[in-house]
Length: 206
Picture 1 (cartoon, rainbow, N blue to C red):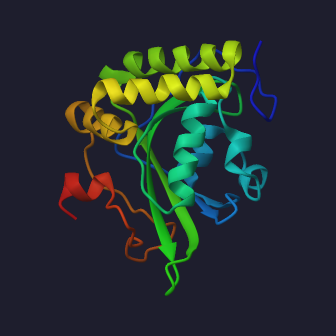
Picture 2: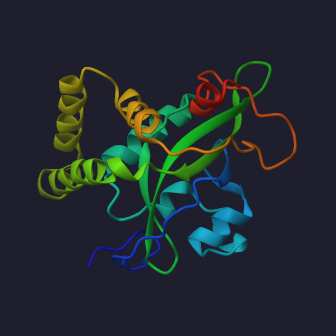
């Protein structure tokens, strides 16, 4: 049975997220976790000391294609927001679906200092579509390797006539059940400015 990088065995039981709450994770420029909020701890089952200092890749679900993970990380390293529906794994092996939203803190020279990942409940009507696509990518990766999976991924985007980010944003905006905005920073400060505005900025006219 496949396991993730922490060797927790996945089980086929879903955790449904509260659409009015968000998990927050703050990372440094090396992708190491600096902060997680209480809702992340509640849903993931990880204690704070178990995740702080770990890299984001160590918590990746074994059924999330590496193609998708790398695509998200390429955007993040460039300080670009990306909204993608992701399957993640809790400590007890259960899974949950969320969509990503990133905000970036930069210095006066536009160098990345840190970034915050906001995770909120993914719209349920599109989960089967996303999961079907991810399963195809995963099987290609396992059978033919990451390079071949990337060509399939690129072909999927070409057929849709849009980037994978825009494809996910359209799914989220058309089928989302978002009820209210949430703080994008672990403190009470104003949201961090970023190059590409958060999807929540568009939804809530922020």
